[in-house]
Length: 337
Image 1 (cartoon, rainbow, N blue to C red):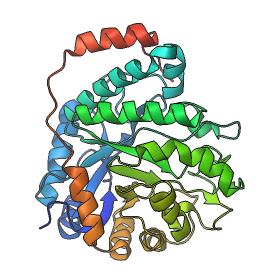
Image 2 (image 1 turned 120 degrees about the horizontal axis):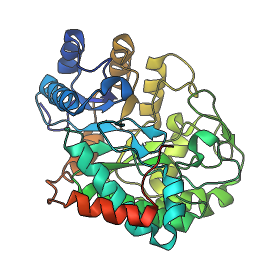
Image 3 (image 1 turned 135 degrees about the vertical axis):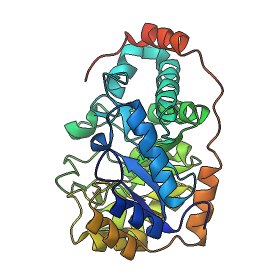
Image 4 (image 1 turned 180 degrees about the vertical axis):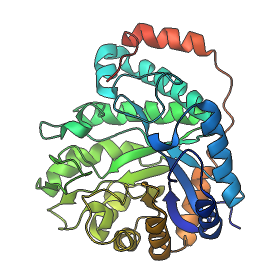
């Protein structure tokens, strides 16, 4: 059995613990890792048991991811976990001290995640905020300036790594100009190549050395009529223009921005050059179809996976109360949002 798994997939499960059928499937498919959603989260003891069961089902220390950006996109919530304000709101509240505030925020989030066996977080969002950015994404962004996004995104990533959690930058090559919610529709960005290279892509280039990233279900008309997730031309942009050399996962294949059967979507993403097919809704029949069409990880994907997993570290202890006090002084505390 490979230390990184066999199938080029990340899967969810349907509830607060894997069913016996899910455990059998995970044992056979041996996906790279797992991802948790609100349906999988009850309390710390349950989440700790779930992460242990998922790893036991594949017989190795598989990475387990979550979306814990803060604000609306936060799977671990009160009363058992802290409520964090949306990233953009937090950055604006901290002003010039935003880099330190973000380091504290995501070092604390990393501690929350590691405490229940989660060691991957789908953050930071490095999309550049624009006037066109759809509301589903807007307050999850860090800035409307590409250089600032890159600077703050680096801080967020380093805080995660210090806390023993792998960051996943998203959404390559850039989601900020998309005026539709990809959970429901497929947006098309019509900006020309030079404009995109100088703005949206520029936020990701300084982060290209990070271990993991996620694609955007967005059409970039200057290159292709297919969404970036399924576009060889856009994956080439991600690899060559942006220079990302890490493990590249699709955004959730269940999102309605993509068309065709779930198996067709997975096959198209892998054929385009994604390393990993991400499937999030926990439907067993769909997961079986994704595994069948995504196939096994090839040598390049396995090497990228090993490099990413090698960055998981045992974090040094922190004084959580002291970090929280400093964070709250910089950000004005935490709010629901």
